[in-house]
Image 1 (spheres, helix red, strand yellow):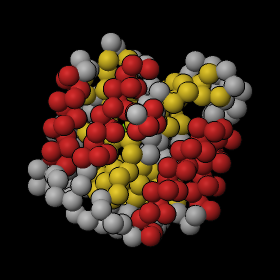
Image 2 (tube, rainbow, N blue to C red):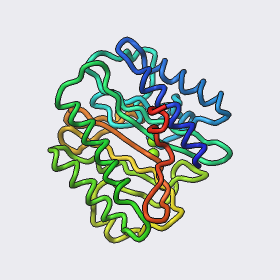
Image 3 (spheres, helix red, strand yellow):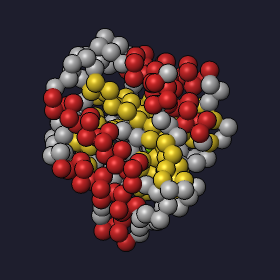
Length: 252
Ligand code: MG
Ligand code: MG
């Protein structure tokens, strides 16, 4: 899973630097496909089916622009512009094991509010990484994530949550970014060796979302922006290891 995570990190780093005004999300998808093939991996999202959608997901990446929350479809018609924010979600399977990660990228100069939304959403993921360790209940982690996002005046999406990950992209348990009766009734205690894809989706306005007619793209109901950060993390003795970390890459 470290190897799969490293491939995901490498691709997302490249997409992060390639996402600029004038570039299309279709071009970013092509870069991801090519790098995935070169790494001998398979793109996880391409061809995934959903009961709401007539067509399988066509992209290697999810490219969600501004008020799009997740599952935006990359397209040669979608040209990035100065002031946009773009959430890029990407996953691979390598040697039978999966990695899944997402980042929201500013395009050119963005507004102060968008900047704060990006910092808060990344911060919400960092809260989870700081708190996740053996013996901790997930509701404790989720509570701190929710508190952090809401303290900034933003809201946490309810309909989509993080997940266990292994030989399949989506495995048990679900790891929501907020506390609910449902979570408290069916809480999990983190144990060494668990691998989770933790992925806060934070809305600038209210938490409500809806799915567009294509059956895939999730947008905010109020039309305000949304951001998404995700890492695949392994629970290890005393803490967690971020398997999709881009830090070693960006320092190099
Ligand atoms: Mg993802
Ligand atoms: Mg995920």
